[in-house]
Image (cartoon, rainbow over all chains, first blue to last red; front, side, top):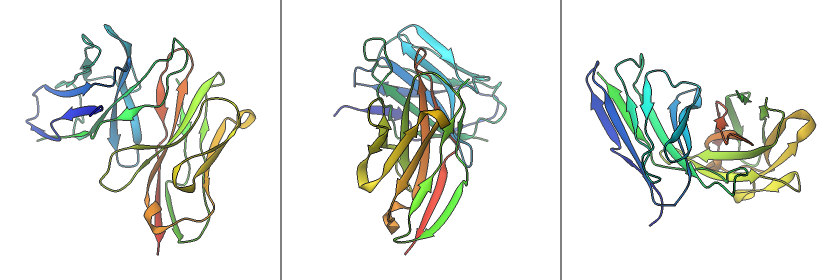
Length: 116
Length: 113
C-alpha cells in the first residue's frame, strides 16, 4: 500500500540524548514536512524539504536537524539542545506539480516522543 | 512567515446545530487552502481544499468552505452537525513559491447528542 510510515509509534529517551525519528514515503512525493503537535498549539512546522538534498527551517527548527538524502526518506533528529522535546511528531509529504503549488499533504500516523 | 489564525479553540454544540469555523491567513500572494480533520485517536485527514476557481468548495461529510480573497479568509461550514463530527479541525495554507505549509492552532469541536 502507498503511504507514509513513521516509526516507532512510541519512543522514550533519557534527557540529554539525541534521538532520530523515521519517516518514509512510497508515494513518489517531492516535498516532505515535519511538524510538532502540542495541545492547543496546532501543528508547528519544524523543517520541510521540497527536493532531495535541500531543506528549509520552519517556525521552530531550533534543537532539531534533518537530512534528505533520498526522495523517500526524511529523518528528524531531536537533539539534546531542544528544550522541551516531549511531543507528538507528524511527518507529511506532498507532490510538486511542475514547479507550481503542491497538492495537499498526506500525513503519517505520528510518533509520540517522551523524554524522561 | 505565513501565519494562520483560528479563533474559538473550543466549540461545543448540539446535534443538528450549524457549525462555522473561521480561518484567516496573513500571506497576500497565491495560496492553496486546506481544512484537515483529526478524529479522536486517528491521524489527520483532508476535509476539503481550494486551489483555484469557484471560491465555494465542498468536501466530505457535508462540509463546505468559502474562500474570500479580500478578507484572507477560508471559513468552514456545516449546516447540521452530527455527534460523529466531534473532532479537531485545522486550517492550513500553502504559499506559492516556497510551498511552505502552515497550520492554525485548531478548533476542538464537541457535538453533544
